[in-house]
Image 1 (cartoon, one colour):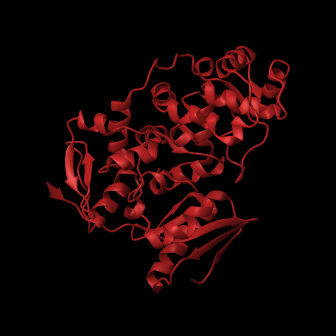
Image 2 (image 1 turned 135 degrees about the horizontal axis):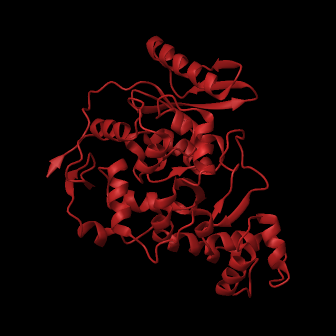
Length: 359
């Protein structure tokens, strides 16, 4: 079994995520390659694509959503993602268990006592048939049939039980926070095609490894939110490596590894970027000290920047300013490179001023 070191894992991840050289492939191709692009808030996926796609423009992503080529919905890890519509047709059924289990959590269970989930799903489908509604309007439409204290919770529950998509302009550039008044529609009606009848876990594993491998079974499960994938992995013909910690890592048989000595430019990653959240063991891109500093409160929801392929600081938008904060002192050369990429990001977001803080 071949051993693989941390820098090889780092360079391989960045290479497969187009974070070493920006790619000439389309934004749609990149989203499809990454399986799903995390997008709790509208602007972040735009930043993730800007860092990966040469010449990416802010309206490119919204055009894909309006064309129904890409959909915004609840997917892996029960969080909001953007995915190719054809991929969503098998991906959502593949993670159905982790999505629906949320109904057992106190947030829902305490508010929906006595509500029959299957009946709520049927009524939700009927309420949305042939039209789109805001979550508020959907909750109000269901309130007469299911009297609960918080009608919005009915809409939230339907979104877990029934595959729904968020209509444009939910993914449009313009907000750093969650958009209000989102309209939802039945996914199958919006896409004009049915979803798969059941999970396609082999497809899920293979597609994940193409973008995130080499990876452990726990990495795959952490990314997807789906458990018991060991049997699926064991049934596939995969290449096996020994990771830096001695654990087995799996990859596609013909997938190349990157040169560990390959130079990596500074890259700015958005909050919730898939390169930061795609593994249970995130040491290939962020050291444990930094991960622990931010994981408890933000769970990855902090925009960060990479120097030499690893997290070295955070950034934020304050009004029209881009504020960059190193987590440790940078060399003069590193600081110059961070400032150069930050200026390019500032131009992309349409900001006015760059502020570089000291570590």
